[in-house]
Image (cartoon, rainbow, N blue to C red):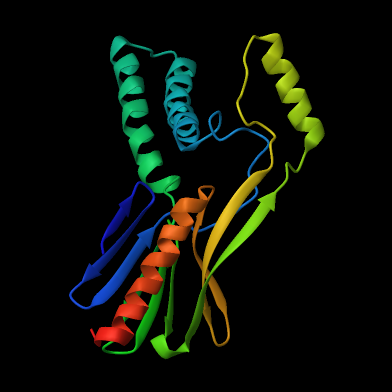
Length: 207
């Protein structure tokens, strides 16, 4: 029953189901294409800023030596992975379902926060797949960026196009919680099936 994808894992461990993902927020993106502005670029900016600040401070002091060039390079090399791993780390979500103990727990962990939602499995009424279409929020900005890109002989595939997002939601008595979002409908359907198969198997076999 285990199902592993680049952006989620769904595992049957003992008689419990554990689902993990970093793809659970359907947010409207920046006018900048995800292929242009991403975690790697943001981390590069932070690392370059730290390295440049050190370099500028030493240069202004008038005591620049070869060792300072090496320190600048080391600062960039250190700050880049640290920024990527901690400052711009994607929040992660985990769902734990345990039929034996009637538990449905959801945990969300971000860089600076943690959130836990504890329900009973009997409160879980439905698992739904919702489709959301997100239009470009700034068509003038999109047109401007595309014009500049074309002037430089560059084409950004999919830039400015509407995004189709498929959201998997756990529907409880009092709240619906989005636990997975993807632009790939088949992957979202696979996640829904994984949850439903576990619940159906729990009822049929008493696992």
